[in-house]
Length: 279
Image (cartoon, rainbow, N blue to C red; front, side, top):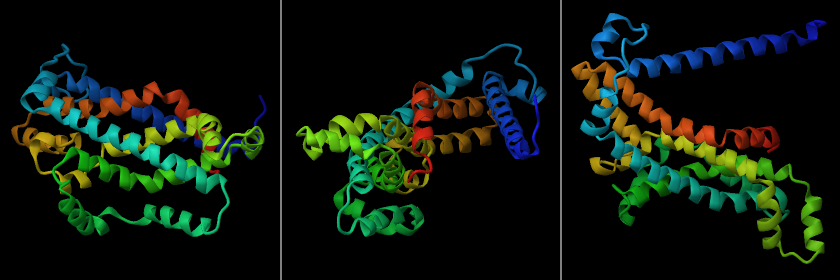
């Protein structure tokens, strides 16, 4: 095997990527193992293998600290927001990415500029609008907030995927008599499916760990999402020194996004290889 100096940067990058992946897997494995240990065992050896696998930590967190309810609230809000933003952003990205019309540039810019607006700068007008609409302390209101704040990023990502689809396919469909809507539904959406799934995974993972919007707009404990539930869990278990329960709670918070990604991993990677950098 011949070695070229021109390939040295690639080998260096691969080496550091390997170290990062190894570190991530090691820390995640340590987190899972520690979640099955009692607090006494953790103090005796932080990196030691557990003497026996205890599920009491998970049972206590799910029952005594209502983590199951927090997870259900987040699933409802995040899944609703993901579906809503994909349904709205997909046709918008198609129009901006494939069609030519007057004012296309300013419209695209006005949407994409939303990526640069920090949430803290719009909290007050958002809260006033949500309060007048009666959507504060509401999972439905939180879902709409999630969808609205994720819309610019989703459109920006999907524009890149639609631009990679050859326009000749769409032109051929129109020659055969298909309307613009039929061409979009029957040709563009199926071809852009990897990109749509990738955008959905990004949005789901991003919203699952969202904290600021939940903190400002949700005060009722019965409808708080998992981010606020974890914050409450950290505050209470750190005070009592229940480190085993705390590790179990962190694993439960991470689990849904990992499962969601694992199910759609192949489509996610396929979408990345097609669309990234083409917007």
